Structures are given as C-alpha cells and as structure tokens.
Image (cartoon, rainbow, N blue to C red; front, top):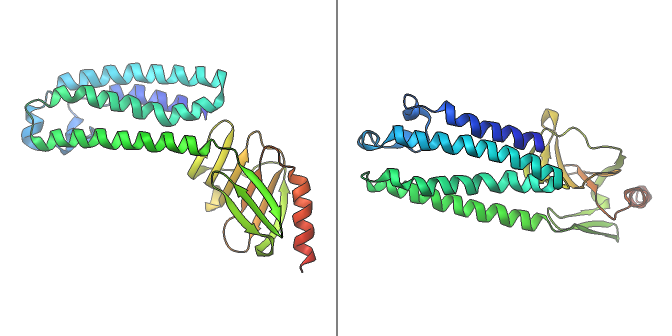
Length: 243
C-alpha cells in the first residue's frame, strides 16, 4: 500500500511537467472538450502555471504524508490514498473557477458539475471507509457459516465442494471492489489467470480458512478472534459426515 501511495505522489508531481500549452488541447481534461471559441478565450498559459504549481506541491506533500502516515499507522495510508486526492482536486477545481470568466455557460456548468461529482465521490469514499471499518463477527451452527460485517457471507456446508486451511494468501493481483488497508482486506479480489476470491481478512493473517462452494468463488477467511483451525475441523467433520 505504501509503495502504491508513493508512486501516486510521484505521478501527481510529474503531471505538472507533462501537460504544456502545446499538448493541452489533446490531453488536458476539460480544456480538450471546450468549444473552439472557449479554448481561444481561456487563459491556458496562466492556468497551466497554476496547474504546475499545484501538482508539484501536491505531489511532494502527498508523498511526504504517505511516509509519515505509514510510520504511525499503515491504515492511515489507505484512507490517505482514497480521500486526499479527491479533497485536493476539489480545492484546485474550486480555486480555478476564476479562469472561466468570459467563457460560455456550458463550460461554467461543466466546472460546477465536476465539483458536484467530486463532492459525491468524497461522501461515498468516506462512507465506504466508515462502513468497512466495522469489525466482522461470525457464527457457525446447524451446518451454516455466517460472517457479519463488511462483505458478509452466509454459506451452507452442504453447498461446499471442499474446505482447506492455507498458511498464506494466494497471489493477489488486484482488487475488483472492496477495501484494502494495512489492517484489513475485504471484498472481491483477483489473482493470476483470472482467479477470483472473496476475502475476509484481518491482517496480519494467520492460517486462512478457505471454502470452495460448488457454485461461486472461493471464500478466504482469517478474522481476529477466530480459531481458523478449530472451525476448519468442525466444518470438515460436518462436510464428510453428510456424504
């Protein structure tokens, strides 16, 4: 997570140098969709000076905060990764409205729409972090395993093909959707060869209870307070006693 965050900070920094007045009409979002009249009226040189200054300082600050947050609590890096860019670009979009003076109503409306979208995205991301920060609880009775909390599941043991206990997670290439911080990995993930997994992991993961439904994707569970080996033995006994 820290390496992704640092890499993103370097990307922000480099954006200040990548976009120039010569290529802005092709790659600068917003400007490249303006009408010809608005592009001619837009003070692109002055705007790009502000754009460059913002990205240089934001790239430096973002990278520095990533390192500091990682030293104190790796979970903060996950929050920083999801929230800080939205807040920063919202601020930049808001302060950049002065460059729209004299432009068409459509262009001004697009700026307003961008601010609304960023605000809604920020509310969604913050809500997702609050929701996903809840602890997961579990129960196993009457041949049914239930995990309550973020990305909860309910599985009947009779619907399983097999169950195994892993010493470590399989290789994960990316997250399809879910939450991943220094302390948790919960949601839908993918591995090599389009392998898919449903993770319910509190980090650091110990033994990992892995359930293979006869329909659906494998579920990998390692939760704080759960004795995965004891639950594995119980499920294994119930699974094979029904054969």
